[in-house]
Structures are given as structure tokens and as C-alpha cells.
Image 1 (tube, rainbow, N blue to C red):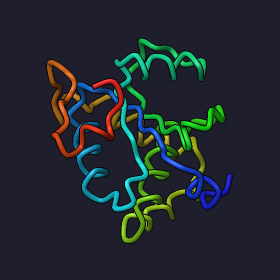
Image 2 (image 1 turned 90 degrees about the vertical axis):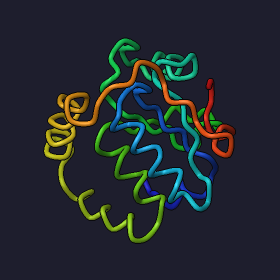
Image 3 (image 1 turned 120 degrees about the horizontal axis):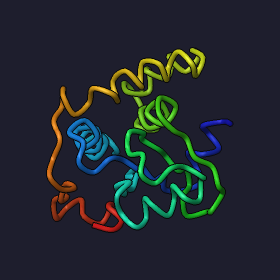
Image 4 (image 1 turned 90 degrees about the horizontal axis):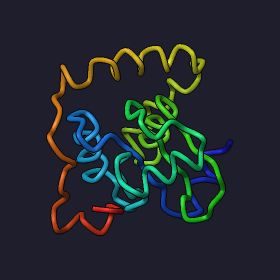
Amino acid sequence: MATQMLQSSGSHLILYDGVCGLCNRFNAFVLKHDRKRNFRFASLQSATGQSFLRRFHRNPGKLDTVYVVPNYESGSGLSLERARAALFVLKMLGSPWSWVGIFGILPDSLLNFGYDCLARNRYRIFGRYDQCMIPSVEDRERFIDV
């Protein structure tokens, strides 16, 4: 699927583990660098996150994967997950972050092997919160189900 087509259509939704330190750092990074404000956020634990997981036939109890729903308001039924989701986000942020997109030439099996290694150890390395992050007043409008 062409990223150009996705880019022009609207907001993209990042579904993330709300208690994961790595996920919350990733969201903070995106908020800081998303100059076009293309991204919205919902935790996997939220009603919105659970609804999307069911819609995409994913296990709502499995919270170790990041998802991106491009143009989520269109109801297209498309979702990206794991490494492809992260690469999509970085590409949409523009230069210099989009340069990471070169890794997109790698097969999913290799990309997701690296992603899965990090996902298995994310709480140990980056910590775990007792509850989902509360966004700042300035960023609250970009979070769904806060």
C-alpha cells in the first residue's frame, strides 16, 4: 500500500499499551515531532482500543503489540501492527525520522523478530505504570477515551 495515499486522507490512530513505559515514551516522541498533528492515540485497554482489537479480530487481552489504524475515521478496516506500525509512524513524521523507513525493505519476519524481542522485555527495560498515562491539557484532544 502506498504511504502517499494513506498520508493524505486524514488522521491515523495509534493503539498502544497504556501502562507500558516504552509505549508512553513513543507517544511522547510522536506528540513532540508530529508537526502536522496526523496522529491520535488510544490505549489498548480503553473502550476504543478494545473495539478496534475486536474489529480486527485480535485478542483484546493481548497488549504487547502496537497498532496503527491509518485514516481510522474512514472505517477502511486496515491496520498495521508491530514493526510495520512503528515504521509507518516514523515515516509520517517526516525527515529525519522518515529515513528509518529504509528498514521497510526487510521482510516482516525479520522486522517482527526484533520487535518481539523488545516487546517481551519492555516492562523490564522501560518500566510499567499502575495506570494509563494522563496526557497534558495541550495534548488531551489527541487522545481518545482518556
